[in-house]
Every structure is written in structure tokens, then in C-alpha cells.
Image (tube, rainbow, N blue to C red):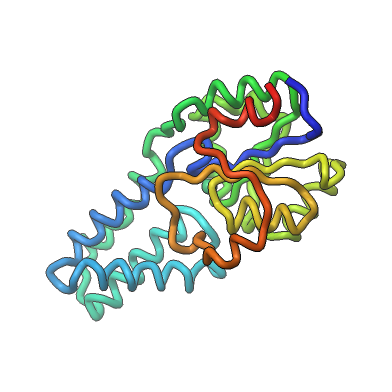
Length: 232
Ligand SMILES: [Mg+2]
């Protein structure tokens, strides 16, 4: 397989392996912990607001999310949440970190195939330790010529990655499930991007349709469509 790209970067969470469903199952546990105090919708609304507020302090990932669960529990119980319940929340965070890495269908085969003909890199945001151990557990680690775990994926991030990788923007392709993080900033940096939506998108990563329409990029139904699209 050959293509016009000199470097193909893959997002990890919900592009190569399932991630959002781990958060959603934790949401359910968090709601059941606090449902004697509030309605589920309000609990999740407050948790989301706290998470977004805390991103600038704690960054993306499970550790920051766990602190946000604790903070939300304190707020929603007006300080009545017990030490035992806080312990339970910490355990929820630990369970998320220990959750098995489940690859998306076909992800391994596709990454192997593309790695055979192109340099590929992993470009993901989140906790360093968490992403490193997930990559190790995924069994895909050896296929990537480079791995970058960044705190945010914006146009400056991609420009810096292109500079470090010594790749001309037009020769760079990003593959990911978030229009906000994997597509728009790549296009703004002069690269190309393939959007492969996951079955669910975290509210923070959602982009209004009007804004999406202003950008030109390829949308594929699944990662298995990537090799044929590349010309394999
Ligand atoms: Mg993702």
C-alpha cells in the first residue's frame, strides 16, 4: 500500500480502543452513590460542569476525573459525604485505570497493515502513565514509530508535532474520533484528517454542526475502511 502521506498519526481513545464506555459505566456507579440526594440528570450535569472547570487544573484523564467526582460529591451532599464514600469514589477511579483495554473491531489488523507501508505514530491526550500502560496492554506498542502523549490537541500541538517529526503538513494524516481534537486543529495546521466517529462522543468533544460544515475532511464508517481509502 502506498499513499501520499509520509506520516500517519492515530488517536487512541475510541479510535483504537474503547474508552468512553468506561466513563459511562462509572457515571452509573456515581449516580447510584448519590441518588439518595439528587436526580440522576442533576448529578451528571454537576459532575460534567466540575470536570470542565477542572480541566485547566488537572488536565484530561482518569485522575482528574476522580478528583472531580469527589468534588461533586462534596458539593451535592453539602459536605455530608462520608470518608467511606470518598474511598468508594477513589476505588471507582482505580477500577477505571485497571479496566481491560478492549480494541475496536479490526483495529489491530488495520494498524498492522498500515504500519507495514507507512511510518505511524500514536498521538493521544490524557494521563501519561495511564496512556502508556494502556498502550502496553493493547499489544500495539511496537507498531508505532513514535508515541506522543500531549495535554491538549490544538493547532499549536499539531504544528509542534509536525516540526518535531520533520513532516510537511500536506504529508501528514491524522485519524481520530473527535472532530474537535483530531480533525479541525489538524486541518488548521495544514494537515489532512480522517474522522471515524465512535458510537458515543463525550459532550466536551462535541462541535456544533454549523462549525463542522465549514471544514473539509473524510468521514469513514469504521477503521476497517481506512486501508482501502489509503489505496491499499
Ligand atoms: Mg479519541
